[in-house]
Amino acid sequence: MIFFNESEILLIPSQDEFLSEYVNPDRSLLKFVTNFSGSNGIAAIRKKGKNFLFTDARYTISAKNELNIDTFEVIDMAQTSIMEKLKSENITKIAIISDYFSHSFVEKLKLHFTVNLISKLDVFREFNFNPEIQNSKIFHHENQFSGMQACEKIEKIRNKLNKKPYFITDPASICWLLNIRGRDQNCTPIVNCFAIIDEKNIHLIGNFENEIDIPVLFWRFTDIEKIVKNYDEILITKNQANSQIVDLISKNCKITDTQNPILIEKAVKNPIEIANIKIAHQKDAIAMRKLIAWTRENAGSITEIDVAQKSIEFRAEDKDFICPSFETIAGFNENGAIIHYKPSLQTNKKIEKDGILLIDSGGQYKFGTTDITRTLLLGDYNSQFPQADFHYELAQKSLEMLQNLHFPNGTTGGQIDAIARYNLWQNGLDFAHGTGHGVGQFLSVHEGPCSISKSSNVPLMAGMVLSIEPGLYFEGLYGIRLENLVVVKKSDKYEDFLCFEVLTSVNFE
Image (cartoon, rainbow, N blue to C red):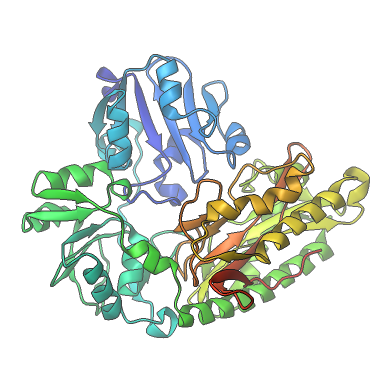
């Protein structure tokens, strides 16, 4: 391979040029090269020796099932970072796909290695990977759902930027700002695009199938250099921008790194958005109750894939359902212990009458985005798993302890993460993922900047929607996870305190 002429290793991430968490399988270079299907991974393809796949604890088990372990070593990046591993292997020269890694990440690598930047098209040719060119179809997200006109949002963001031009690289931020949506991702209604907002105009940049009536100037991706030449300085968020984009802009004007001013505005839902999100959850609860009843009735003659397909079919009975919010997780017995397991033809298990089934699924409605996990205890599960009732009770207590919490204004997700783990810790147990993530309004099911995790330093604010999803996983046996979505609101008990209102309305066992 030509890039090994100057490098010892090639890094391939799970993300794309928009640094998206979720990439459609037919557009994922990492999936094509390695067969890894997770949403967080980086493959290190070596010129000589064993390759590496870096991922997090959600995917370490599934990665070992999907990859050829004779040629790949799976590494938990929380235990060993990419830089640590490559240094230990005496790697000094690295090839990086400049379109697929953030500028901030590349700059960190340059402190330790000689970095050879190559384009995705060169790598596509080497691996004979030929994804179709994507043409985006845009549609309006009406004010009755968004709760705020696009012109109001635009003015608010311009004021936060002090009228300086800002290059937006996050498609979800652009969709929120302009009250538009699309179908460029299978499970997230976004338009894969970039934008520049300045004092007078918004330049929307992409491969568009249609142009709708919104206050923008439409451009193609090939026009970026032509646009940025008109500015003396452009603000950009370097850790959200791929390295190629940053380098292209910096050749034409001054770049100043700044935080994305849209993220917090998008995360704090307005009253109309919250009212609509509650409607989405009411709709979703109907489908979920049907799914649970159907699964119980048909256990013994159905498979994990059947459950996953049925989770979509029941939601699709509602006229406002658009698509799933992520690929359904349906893991029976030992497959439930794989945190982000997705059933495939190779791993598909029959749902026996006796056992434990973990179902994590969600839907996209114009009203909002849902995400719910329920674990079904089927038949005589106790004969196989005598501690299952105890573990289920621990998970439920952990969820309820956190969702019933009142906490002071300014509290971060990192400060309350341990509350969901307290009951587990007292029994020598824990889970290897965050307790909760932010959720968008008919947007990304995983939405920043808020989360409930050990590392989160973002204060929780009234209007933010998050998941609470503690779990217990026993490799080779079963997994138990329970998940509700909640919205942060002012406490009705204590002044200057916040609390959670539960959005999910499906009973536990």
